[in-house]
Every structure is written in structure tokens, then in C-alpha cells.
Length: 173
Picture 1 (cartoon, helix red, strand yellow):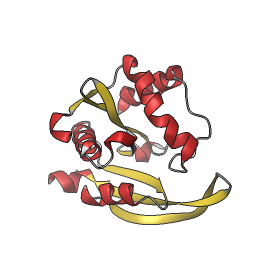
Picture 2: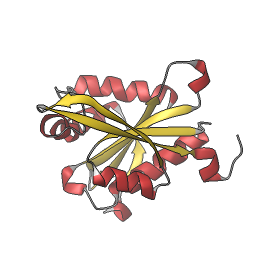
Picture 3: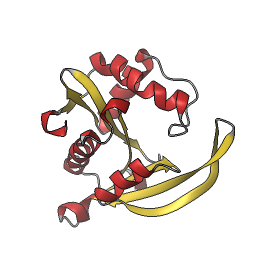
Picture 4: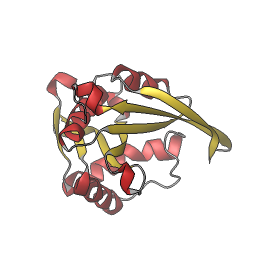
């Protein structure tokens, strides 16, 4: 599927599709720590906010959103201005098809062009698919926050990984 994937900037018209794709993650898993799926209007606000400084990309296959990836601020202090936190969600019907890898590669390339140096990603454990994706893209594990999220009647750990974009692209800044 990734070979026929159109990767593009998200628009407000994608908000409903992104919200629908995300809802099962919110309702059925601990992958997201949200407990209520955001409505399309809220998703449109999030898309706009991400695009102000970073990026929100969608992967479209046969006219339908098969996944999305975005970046946002990691911390608010000025010293962190060249670091972003990334997230990716793939339609359940598109997992294992290469959509996630294609989307994430496009996002990382965009973030590098925007002058970002480091990206970080947190993932609820266990999450072997996300861990494998991040590892394949060159992210390195940097730590685990133990029992920091309570969802579906259980405590969950969050693993953190990071990627140095300047090293990945051969740059020095």
C-alpha cells in the first residue's frame, strides 16, 4: 500500500477522517491516554496548531486517509525550540502495510527542513509495532517512565525514544 500512498499536508477537510481513525485508539487501547475521542472540530484545531510551527501529514490511499503523523512542541522553554515531539496513527486496516514508515519518513524530512534537530516520541508499553517502527527509523531508546498513565483499569509505562535529525541527515547543527 505504501507505494500507492499519497503523503500530503493535512487540511481542515481531513479532520473528520483523522478523528475517526484515532477514535478506536482512544476507546479500545491504552496507546493514547485520552479517554474521549476528539470531535472533528477539535481535530481541525489540532491540525492547524501543528502546522503553525511543525507539520501534520496525512497518508491517503484510494482517496481515504490511511494514517497521519504530526509534530508539536516538546517543552515550552526556549532552549527546546529545536526539539519536537512526534506522533503517528495508522488506520487499523492499514497496519503492517508500510503506511506508517512512509508517513514518518516524510514527517522527519519535513522537520529537518524546518530546522529541527531532535525529535522525541513516547509510546505506551507494550507496543511492539510502534517500537519496531521507531527503531527502524533510527530512534534510540532513552528511558521509560514507569506507571505514569492510568487507563482501562491499569497503570501503564511510557517508553521514550529520540532521533537526532542532524546526525540522520549528516548535518552538524
